[in-house]
Amino acid sequence: MQHFFKNNRKKIIGSLKEEKAIIFLFSGKAQHKTCDQFFPFEPNRNFYYMTGIDKPHLIYMAIKNGDNIDETLFIERYDEFKAKWNGKTINEEEATNISGIENIKYIDEFYQAISTSIFRNNIETVYLDLENRYLDKSNRAFKEAELLKENYPYINIKNIYNNIGYLRLFKEEQEIEYMKNAINITKKGIENILKNANPNIMEYELEACFDYEIKRNGSKDKAFNTILASGQNATVLHYEDNNDKINDCELVLIDLGATYKYYNADISRTFPINGKFTDRQKQLYNIVLEGQRKVIEAIKPGLPFKRLNEILLEHYQEELTKIGLIKDKSEVSKYYYHGVSHYLGLDTHDVSGGLGGDDTLKKGMVITVEPGLYIAEEKIGIRIEDDILVTETGYENLSKDIIKTVEEIENFFKNR
Ligand code: GLY
Ligand code: MN
Ligand code: MN
Image 1 (cartoon, protein in one colour):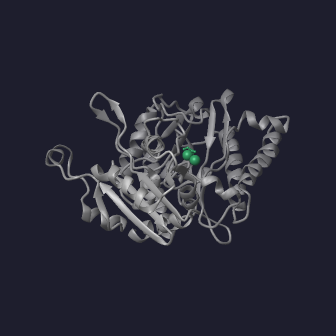
Image 2 (cartoon, protein in one colour):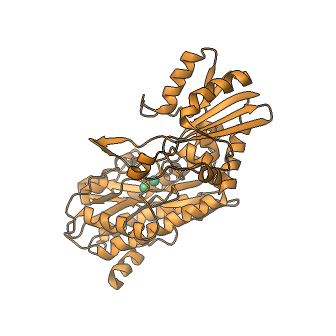
Image 3 (cartoon, protein in one colour):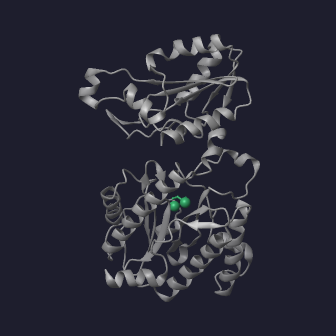
């Protein structure tokens, strides 16, 4: 993968308009949880995409000076005490092997390096990853932007978030392989849920069946908090409490994914806890499934992203009227209230870099297709979600092997 990370850096630095500029990226740090406990460390995904390294506190610096590119990675110095308590940090050789960056320095040399680089190269533009969706003032890039403005008031600070986000939309072969792996592991996790599903089980017990199976199969973590929602809970889109008892005859909505090398799967399935759909459940389920089929089959390069949701809405308007659930087209929004697709990759709701101002699908993008139907008064929530790669001529359903039709689900229960 070293070649992939090197190539990403080359493309991003090549996309800068300035003759001279500096980029700084930070890997981040573990977030504080309580007392002396921290949440597991998650590398900043743009830092990871550019270096391949998933260790905290590291800094990537690239100086662009005409055609010349000078890259440095700042790592932690070896600390014997820390090594004994928390384990060794990454060393020079490991950092170079993963990233392909030859020049390695230590993070205590960073501020001196900023000063030297800016003066020596006459730099007037600094790029930082300034995504700050949750207005988090402790964000390292945000803090560095403040410091730079204070110390070098003539410097232009620019945001590199969209440059990297746009490139991340287009998946290379190796990334697609990792996503397929994440999806395959997710498949095993889903099957383990179905094997253990029985009336009166707790939602979190079934969730545990997924967690156990994905770890057994090479996934270090979940892509996002698992949604395991029975009955009425399934009408809450991001229900994550997972702490109710599942009653006989209820439908269970699972929305979950494994990760593989930080690439995510995002799959939803809905099944009856006792293994047999009622006629009403089957009727509604098949309307959602048919809507999903129509959307997926429309996928090809050139199709506007927003068209995907329109196709589903047209389908619902017709089918929900036919079964008498709605009388007027506008009533669809009472039972379906989210978008049908999002981009998928290193983030579950993957970044898109503003799409370069063009929202049509293009080869190499991976999107979800996830129609849902939520009827609170009937205590029914249904969502079916697959992960789709846009190919040169159409699409490839990366999750096509995961059990989905009424017949497949009922047969699985009969034969388990
Ligand atoms: N799991 C969140 C979503 O499907 O978008
Ligand atoms: Mn999902
Ligand atoms: Mn999704």
